Image (cartoon, rainbow, N blue to C red; front, side):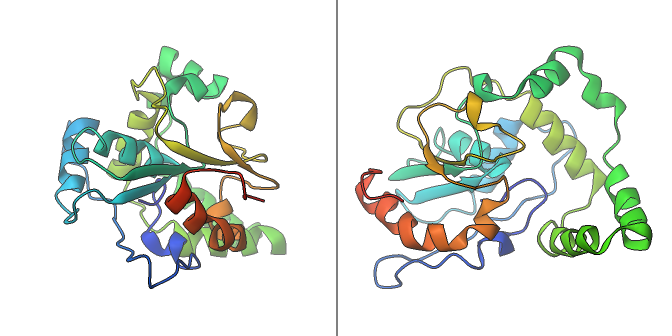
Length: 217
């Protein structure tokens, strides 16, 4: 399950041994008005057609696969650049939750920023913008508003100890200082599923098959 607003293309550089694994991708659905996270996740679950799959989710997708565990039993659940409970949220997200200030910021600002960077941004900013536009393809403000609100309002207070967590030590969205019991990827940012694909191609199959970080580097 990809991260918020992302398509499954974020996994396009991830390679697992074909003789051992078969990969299926989930995509975001358009939320229904007033739909709860539980109701939304149930609709996602309808697209899972295998028993006891290994479920992998990135960022908000990591929250989704943890909610899926309540509906569809999984062999393993792995989250990447995500959190296992709302206790791992940074202070700014907790503040947004308590004050509900997030309701004051419409998410259609994304398209406005893109237009500004395309016209006036530096070469480095334009390069990042091109990558952003390539992988973060969902721009519907209704979806973005729904997703942002449901991340902030996620009500899991205690981490599920069975969930395997992979996290970068340079994650700028969910800082590593608040993350507990994770397999840490050195130099990994929030977008490391794209930029650190070599690490995942080397280690992910081992994590899936053995549930240990003894040989992880």
